[in-house]
Length: 139
Image (cartoon, rainbow, N blue to C red; front, side, top):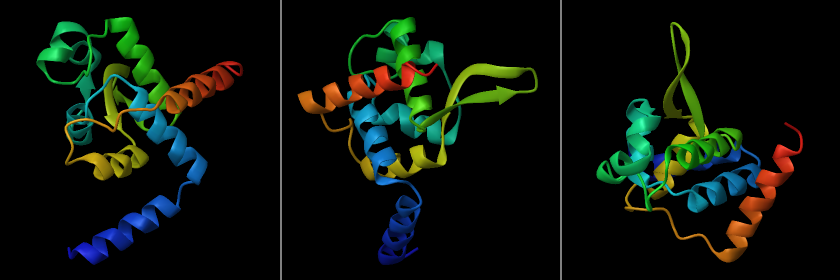
């Protein structure tokens, strides 16, 4: 596919999402302790929570800093709430594996060539924290 066609298609895909939703998802990705490699793997197959957290997450190059199982799961659940991830389902129900949503694929394409997401500013971190508080009020 020619580059100009790909960029037109990508622009069309991004146009399907409200800019505020995309901005919140981008900020959430940049604030999360996960690498681009994790999301690239999630684009092709489900990745189990135990492969993401702790020492295994560091060994798999999925984490930017050591994160325990609860911290990793909380980060992944937030990314589900903002629309980047979804839980994988098998014949018996929800599993401990995660995959990208269509919006997650679009955002991954934006940073796929980089080893990590751009570093979040203090303002981004505050915005992400505030968004989590706002959403959790309604749960």
